[in-house]
Length: 302
Image (cartoon, rainbow, N blue to C red):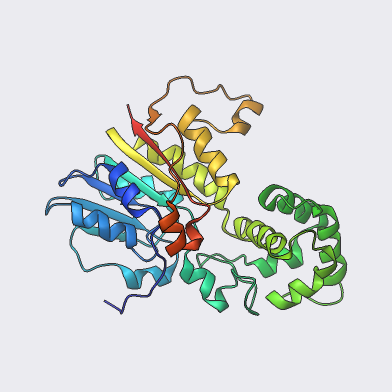
């Protein structure tokens, strides 16, 4: 095994372990393995007959997989998790954990293009096999399509002006690096510059990685794979993700389902185990400021 790469300080670690209510011989799934911080703690609570299946679409995460015969590593997007549960003939899952945040490793590795702090290629792909990068989005999407993604995924207030500025400037030269992009949209920045850029970069990242659709597919399919009283633990970091998770746990459908002709699901198979989302303590925030916006929502299979 390669030398482990520091990825990420696991957020709400003790709270997740407590909520997973781990059985020593149970079968558990870590949908966002990353640096393996949550997984390593789960393994401490599993006995010799326990199983842990872990997912990460980022090839760099494989370096962090422990040499442990209880662990199955799947280098795929978690939207396909339920398929692999069936493939590995795992009857059901006693607990599922997903930490939806971008890892510190991804933010801090300049060439990945996730951060506004470095001048690098605007990549933003979590899975490098994905043919579409942020460069492709910025240089090929129509003005209207750009406007919609900045509105919906970044909640950018002047998305129309932003999209128009990008299209006008890319006609002269392609936008390929972080600094080129920041210079291109400099006059569009509204309010707090750091917050504005964070919203814009978030929107691009969500689009490139199809994050919200992947989350919906994951929740819909993995809930069916839970055993009776199996736990579903999801950590979110922004309102778009949290709204989807909250809707799913409460109603087992998503907002847009009401707008379609599909009948709304009436029989609930999961129930929330906490009145409010669990958030980090002040102590955790002081040690890991990136945990500040984290929310843990938990459900149990009926």
